Image (cartoon, protein in one colour):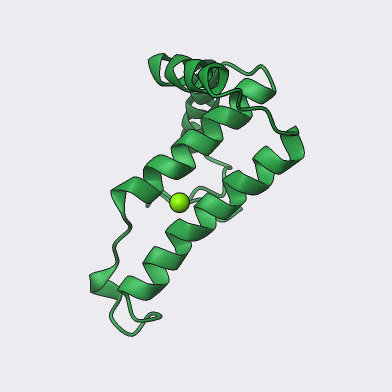
Length: 106
Ligand SMILES: [Mg+2]
């Protein structure tokens, strides 16, 4: 994935080395910022049609995810392919709890 290579080069250029557990915490923090955008944009659920998240915050979360992938020496593109296959199999499985609207009950 070109994006992962870009992140790897950035990490090398800026000597971006943190323990994996802190990289994971940073990822959770960035995803939390997306949740914060969602809660604030909807006035804590009072206006659900107004939901929005900032593009740069999505980028922060994506960056952090790719940092984690690099840290664990995981090819993010390969991981995504495996995930898509897993979800496809769930959708195709008649015994799956998949509800048919894009969401799983598990
Ligand atoms: Mg952020």
